Image (cartoon, rainbow, N blue to C red; front, side, top):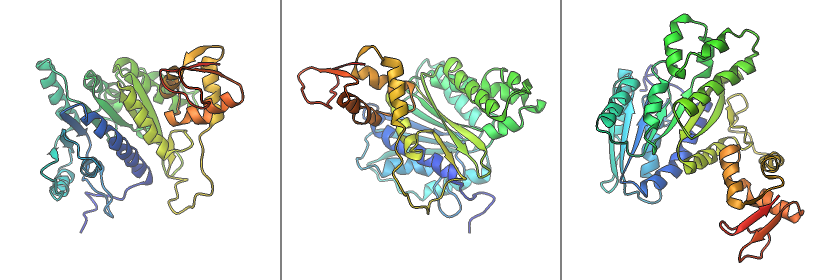
Length: 366
């Protein structure tokens, strides 16, 4: 019988978060393992490994992503699951012990019943003392609260350039307890600055403005203080129709950014990068196909390139790095139609077919 104090029912927004994680790992693991003999996954708040009803937790999701991939990946996968609650930690050990790992798949899994900050700090100290770097590592930070998540730890981790991080930023709790002086140290550590105090003291801010400012402060700290090149966020809305938390993804790899955006688009096909428990209905039939807002993408592309002559790769880079859209939204939906309507002129080297935009051979005049 399942102990309800150890496991609990999974919320729709948690399933959406896990879906994003799974889709990203399914793309990231085979790419990164192609070039590296060792790949690391760290789950900072791993939980018991399962939910009431048998839904899988994040530790099992990553293990299944490795075990069930259609091609056997030859890298050694080191999986570290950290959970401070002893009952949940022991339950996770039991769940993992039941998973059969074939001998030809190299998985080393370890469950630590400890504090996230202490474990990761210890790992980074060894790396720093030896003046070495971490193997490619995906760090999943998915806490219940906001203490013990110092920005400085993320900065140290991301100084290893082949590492990536997915963070649950608990906006609702942060916003609710922002004015409590007991939390001052934790909040300053979380943001890596005390600039959050100005947001708290500004009583003229609307709830939406407050949300934007807290989101943007954390984003800016990841960018400027932690030195992360590419960041993307995704908002989760709870059953009370209130913003609950944000997922912040950070990477120094452009391809990683692209793959995470593709995973997020699978959850929010409108491209708003958000999911709501209120509107979620798994039994509702899809009456029409949701399509991206191509008119918006066209406006953004023209805003950047109107009057310019550029390579098609420059358009792709702009869309992937600077907008919410992804690669599949660019050529056929936008560039081909603009060429048909004589809105752009296309010069192709060695290719005469309209609608083709081969890399290295295409110059576009807007």
